[in-house]
Amino acid sequence: MAKKSVQLDANGHRKFGIRDSLAYAAGDLGCNMSFALKGTMAIFWTQFMRMDLWYSLLLIIVQVWDAINDPMIGSIVDADRHQYKRNKFLQYIWVGSLGLIVGGACCFLPFPNAPTWAKAIIFIAGYVVWDAFYTVANVPYGSLLSLISSEPADRASLSAWRSVGSLVGNMLPMVMLPFLIYDAQNNLVGERVFLVALVMGFFGFLCFQFMIRNTVIRVDLDTRLNEDTPKFNIVKAMGNFLKNRPAIGATIAAMGMFLGMQGASTAVVVLFQSYFHNVQISGLISMFSMIPILFFTPLARKMVVRFGKKELATVGAICSLIASAAMLILPITPDGKGIVIYVVCQLINSLGMGIYSTVSWAMMGDAIDYNEWKIGSREEGTVYALHSFFRKLTQGVGPALALVIMVALGYVGANEGNQIPEVARNMRYLVPALYTFSALLQYVGLGLIYNLDKKTLAQMEQELAQRHAK
Image (cartoon, rainbow, N blue to C red):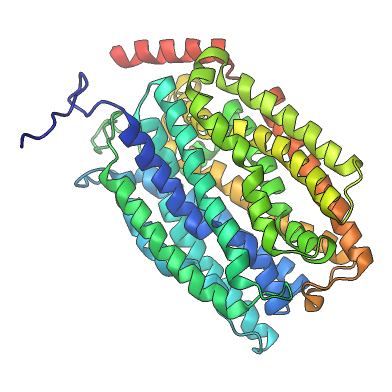
């Protein structure tokens, strides 16, 4: 039987299609098989390992490693001029994905009876190992979007499908973990988390391999080092990032989004443990609230072409702000009626975040192009690494600060899923308060700082195309 012919573009590459989008989605699915466990980390280290405020302090300390790790890996990728069999970004992703098989599990070594100093070492060592491999895989993966295609519609498709990969990567653990790691009394069974993390790490590795084998680099920039190639300057590259207004705006918006998703994650678990008294359904409700994202994703490409990325994302931030404020004000009682109100508000909040998340990576791809347009240099790895660093800073410091607030409001890890009624009520207001602040940050980043609207983006693309044609 004759093989089906592959359509090629003018440069001899396979034409962009659904295969590229699915492969890119698989990459974020692989990332989230490891990263989704971070939402369980605070519960594991406070309720099972009995660290409470020690965990908040340790989580802030390891962000120092993040401060070194992300820009360092990004600059290494940018400065690397070696010729690999396929592409340097794919090579780094392969190495990172291999380490993530065990990297995530290192954060959940179950030794609850160890002395406090030993627990601190276990946490810091495990987090450093996980974070190093995660960055080696994730920073080059994010940088790939601007190299798979230069077409705005293609980038919108990649960004939307990446959101699908992220969504599935979050939904699978979100739904399954509560049934696997909690007992009938809503208490965490810590030993199970380590085993589940190993399985998820191996599944993530398989997802990365699918992505690597099906990714085509179409924007093939020359990375060979010659006499005319200036040496990479990381200090200058970081300074350029601070001048990159779209990158700053998108980064602030992403920090806002993850403050809501990660910062509120521990409080949400306690809300369902002690206020609604049913932690098992928390994953199902969170999955249900993500349904609007699934409906919006297939429309993202056409809507971007018609309205523009910045315009759509700003509308999404406004939707989230309205829904979060309503969740704070409306009477959410600890019964079926209260859960229904909570779910409806979360549906609207999720739609808003979903609109932004489906175009967020395309917006960062445009920000990388903006770096070249206004500053004259392409620094994919550094721009994405600094963006990733601030995202991860929020993902680490956000939950730590939220936990400090929770403790101030009476939360005691040793009480596990049986917090006193006053603490349960406090969680009912803390969760929507965190979501509201999150949505406000998204609006500031997207509506007030990010300046690549549809018209400006078209001008940038035209001028860059003319520059490349010379």
